[in-house]
Length: 477
Ligand SMILES: Cc1cc2nc3c(=O)[nH]c(=O)nc-3n(C[C@H](O)[C@H](O)[C@H](O)COP(=O)(O)OP(=O)(O)OC[C@H]3O[C@@H](n4cnc5c(N)ncnc54)[C@H](O)[C@@H]3O)c2cc1C
Image (tube, rainbow, N blue to C red):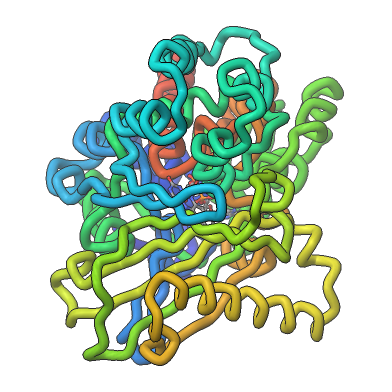
């Protein structure tokens, strides 16, 4: 059932899930299907977390915030842990383009095509390319390799900043990885994406989340929106429920899908963890944030097919630091043609995304903030004009979001759009060993981030919670 936001929930649950991102929802769905009683509490007025959308101009424009592309594995995950209807709506993007001063390339983003481009366009020996991909494919998360992304590229493609750009740029946009990050995180993310191209949910995020909500309710998950959890209740060193809007709700286990650091320091309280764990959590670095510009075409206007995802840059050389800076000349355009939402009146939407640092935006005065937003908007328009001349006159809605917008809507500290860096995974996975009954599921460690990573992490943690509940049941017999 869905509670109204005013209801005081008196029922006790096996598990309370705090937050309805893809990890929280997938975990809730799996546990309810497995027969557990589940309450899903979401602070926002809709489900989905970052998997979200918004409507503007009397609903004539719909914008997807994070539906730019995910790996093929999402089909299997949705089929197994959601339903066939949701899985069947996932389609491959036809054309991913790169346009920058070093090269202009179109690819379907499959491994085969990348190999072809590296050999034919970048003139790398086939044997070197094969060895590079073999190295990526055999990277194992549990290996303790210290190799960085920079070292990996230098090993196979010494001095080739164009190749580094080709291989790393999409990942930098996606999750703020840089040359100093462990090569393993790059290897796993890249191998995932590269196996069979980039995929998207046809029908839009709004349709996907509404289908997921239906499935959650069908499987017996109780849901309350506008239910921000302020505190995790702890008794005798065990998580036993939550406080939402001043009201206590009890459960045998609690799963936080909120930001890792907020979970430990704001909701549970550092005093409930060992000093070593607190130190480790403090040391976890959050990922960077995002800026986006949303553009909608006037009704009746159209543009030709120019690609689905376009990585553009006016910067001569590739630099991960530059990509994160507010004055960067790089941005990714995601194009949503009328086929994206065939059930609606034909419309075109374009979203420009760039990765950015929270601190660069937080320090701005009100007038500087406004000026920076205008710069973002102008950069998006002039970048698009180069690909589709005359498009400026066809756009009737445009607005920009910054890391401060992301922070406000998602409660993620510093507007982090892909959770934490690599070290967050260890803290997240071990939380329940520190504080019985408290689990974390949500974007951490790059590889458990993004639509697929988050959903899969929800499944992994659902198993952990289920084992915990089974142990409690055995102990009470
Ligand atoms: C701009 C942008 C673009 C992206 N593009 C892509 C992409 O193209 N492909 C891709 O795979 N991934 C993309 N991502 C990342 C992806 O969307 C996320 O990694 C994923 O959706 C995160 O899921 P999650 O389960 O970690 O939870 P989140 O989405 O972070 O959701 C957490 C939820 O918990 C709620 N919550 C938090 N605290 C509380 C509380 N105290 N009480 C109640 N509720 C609470 C929040 O309101 C939120 O709904 C993008 C992200 C951003 C920001």
